[in-house]
Length: 430
Image (tube, rainbow, N blue to C red):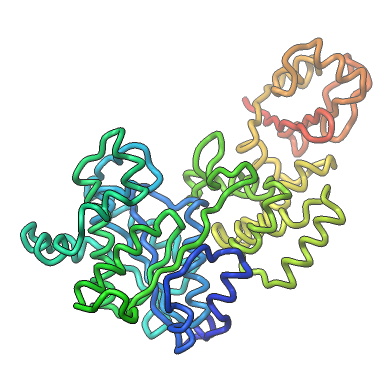
């Protein structure tokens, strides 16, 4: 067993202090006391990338592996063609096989940054539920699975109730039975005893426990052979699900969310939530988190907790070199100090709404340049900023509206700042 698979934590104790344990089924603590366990989380490949909202469940697998257990990721090539009604207001589009295959491959790569896949008792495993769901005939499924579900129980689930009024197809209604079948097959064929997920999945997960009990012919109330564990949903200070911005979801794929935007999302988190994020979405220990929270309380303007969180998660998702670069970019952007690093200038120009200028602008009016940068809406607004000492170019504060435009940095870049927090980077073209 490699060092990463050596049991180093008590799973439930770890999840409790991190605020990642919302509920667990009866008997789980006693089962874990007997030794490591295999557990799974499902990821429907309905998109080309995981996003920040998935990460609590991903870290559940990480902590399971740290506790010596075997993390199993079920990528739903079967259920992904239907869609889970939980937390949605409309039925999802069915995906074609080529799209599903590409999405599964991408998710496999992203999960590999959080868990170690490999052989042996603690090595991570990824499976596709289409491998077994696709083999069922309709009559076989109704006989072997459907008979164990009652309509009353299914209709009582919150995920179903929230959708019934607006219309819900039988295809989507059947999702619960498919997820329960996953648990049954994983238990029988892979020795999986635990399913984990967000708290909105509790109904689907416990449906799997009931299916396993009935399929094994055990009486109601008998000692369980499988277990459920749910984490809280990741919420921001306003009580909304995290992982989204006004521009959409914050993805782990750099093609969908740039490392710059990913780091900025992390480093701008609210003081009220950053402590929870350090616990849930990093592997920092209790002393490290307590120290960062103390630093944050002493010097909130320096944002030490947010910076530590942003660097750690960006490094895990995009690599240490990218995290180092984005930390330098953020420091350069908001410190108010002159910027002279071409790599940082290029990042800010590409991702922070930079602008282009020509040779004529260098011989022209700084007020026109200020308007072209996007920092000011008009020459009059720019003129007032100059009069108040609130405009600088390449670190030089302008004192008059007819001042000459400074020479570009490295022959190509102009950095305009309006006050302490607003900047725009221009690149010479032509």
